[in-house]
Amino acid sequence: MASRPRAKVEDSAWVADVEKALTAGDPSAEVALWRWHAIYRVPACIKDLNRKAYQPQVVSLGPFHHGEPHLLPMDLHKRRSLLHLLRRARKPLSEFVTAVAGVAEQLEGAYQGLVDDWRCKEEAEMRERFLELMVTDGCFLLEVMRTASGWEVNDYAPNDPVFSSHGLLYTVPYIRRDMIIIENQLPLLVLDKLLAVETGKDGNEDLINRMVLRFLSPAAWPPATGIGLALHPLDILRRSLLYGPTQTAPPAPPHHSAPDDIIRSAEELYEAGIRFKRSQTSSLLDISFRRGVLRLPAIMVDDTTEYMFLNLMAFERLHAGAGNEVTAYVFFIDNMIDTAADVALLTCRRIVHNTVGSDKAVAKLFSGMSRDVVLEPHSALDDVHRQVNAYCRKRWNRWRANLVHTYFRSPWSFLSLAAAVFLLGMTVMQTVYTVLQFYQDATTT
Image 1 (tube, rainbow, N blue to C red):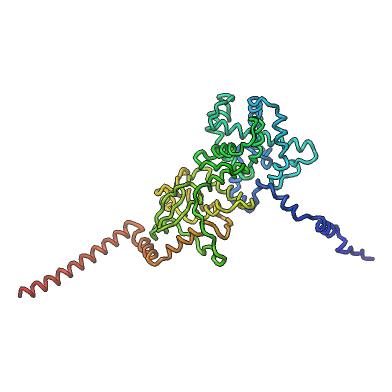
Image 2: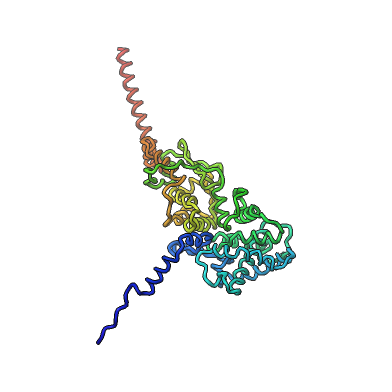
């Protein structure tokens, strides 16, 4: 039986394709490929740790979760919001679509891994579908945020399930939570184009930043002006959490490595003589240590805290150049909170405001958020970390911590120590009295 002639490896189609790519490839094309990416699908290695945190519950924004069965009921209200905005603006829909179509390529590029069905290529049907989604979702966000802000012009029915006082109480909180899901983001460039057509004015970046932040976090530090339009709602929320005076560490020398041990729990730090005080600002970076006092920003722990931090950390992990500040803060706080006693201590110092229930639930919440986190080699919190650990390593502070841990952990150990000290004192007094009595008798004799 004659053997078949073996094809040469160098003649294979794969080798030919790679050789062609080498000659025709342009290195600068890779930069353009990821230039506009800002909204990402969470990888399985992250999502498997807590799938619910990355899944919208009531509304889809953008293409990633559009059409999912449990989110379809809100599509009806999206269309209603579009009609209300058009009637109020008294401008044709074509003007809004044309404005958004002018930045369609940039909007498409914002979504990493967007499937071909949504890409705005030559097919008119695909282009129309993507633009319809952007305009509809953008109008919906504008209407929801305006209703929540108490906008004077409210042409919705009093019993509207979304755009009414009833909807603000029972539906809007879920919409607000879905707006911080990283896979469920809508570029704020869409709102900028829609608002420009509606008002006839350009330059609405600061207005949009304030509107989105006021809706997501009414008590947040107001965003700075003139910083440009944020990428999406999650980005402006992150900016507000990091905005304000911060303690910046000096650049570390090349031989200076990151801290070699984790920071101790709040109770252990307290036993070592460290006291906790509330920072003057709410910036997550406003953490400092000086003269035995650790200052931390106040944090409100509620039902959305876990979702917020997990999605912010995912954004920092996936978006090149975003930074690592939120991740470093969560890792720092997680090391400090091990048990319910740590939460209780920070609550007494008005650093933690617990609205989720027991202190044990808060400790469990933070312990689950820092799994598999990746930290940058150097950050501002590294300097605080080193200072705290150096303070705890001092001999007197170690002795103090050992004394507190051994004799002041419970009332019974303290009572035992007090009784021992009392008996020792009585013994000394008895000895002194006996000696004095002896010399007095000797003098009298």
